[in-house]
Figure 1 (spheres, rainbow, N blue to C red):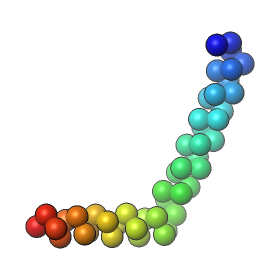
Figure 2: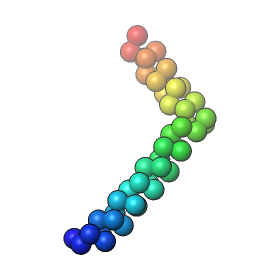
Figure 3: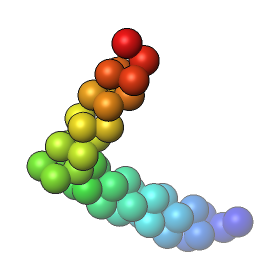
Figure 4: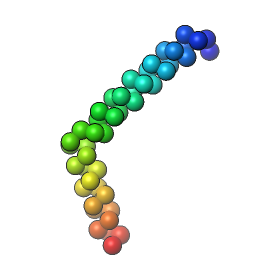
Length: 45
């Protein structure tokens, strides 16, 4: 790959990471993850 292709790939990966970070840190997703962990812990214990 050429340098330009690496640059485009890096920018795309950073954009995807930023989007994923926004989704994971949203309130709804955090509540869903916390609920999932609590259910898993109650089943294990």
